[in-house]
Length: 163
Image (cartoon, rainbow, N blue to C red; front, side):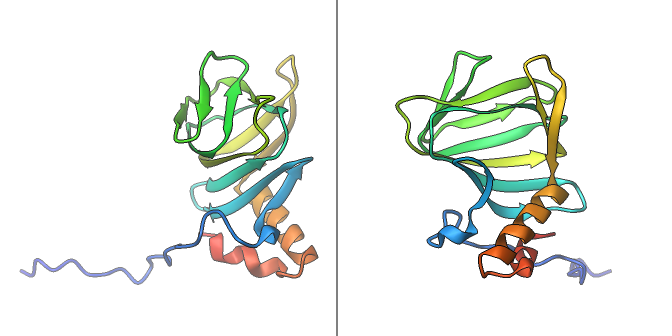
């Protein structure tokens, strides 16, 4: 019996890209002064990895997730109004599923960039907890297609990040 493990032909291609891009066209707008940079959009598991960039202070969004979220602050700082901690450059953040939180960039921060690994959805809510919108891998893909089609990269530019 052979102990050699065969390589599967079904293994998707790896992704190895510069996370913080030199080309600003790669940042996809999602709100005024808020952009994301897709790194991996998994249509099988519903997971996505991206950078979030915010270039203003104040509330970015109030939202919840049905699954855990992991983050790593690359630059700047941010906080959740519902907690005492502040996530600063170099901080790791774990967000448990189900919690509603309000992401705020402090007044003394002009730019924040954070890597997020999200599974499932991001459900936007108002102050009473009523759903006002949502994002998932598929809405992210469409935002990328629309943005890249409009800025000359081409709608299919996002395909390199889809798994």
